[in-house]
Image (cartoon, rainbow, N blue to C red; front, top):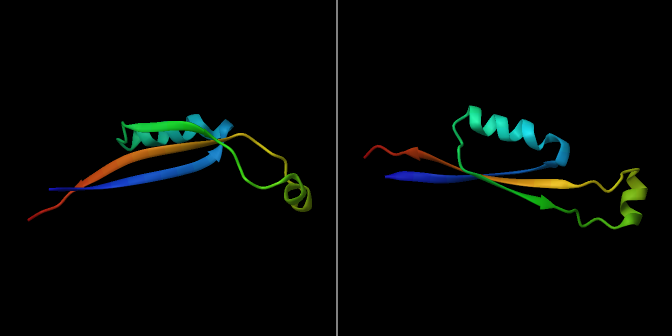
Length: 68
């Protein structure tokens, strides 16, 4: 029997390749990547001095074998 785990990573678009390399290096060969978008309005971003940036959401599935 195995347990499944899902790792969710939300990061800036320019870091996408580094995370995909990390997943492959650690034998996470199945992952799904999609664009993400924040929900903060422009007033909130201005208040904290932030800019709206494209995000990427990476979903990776991992498992461990359980001993009986």
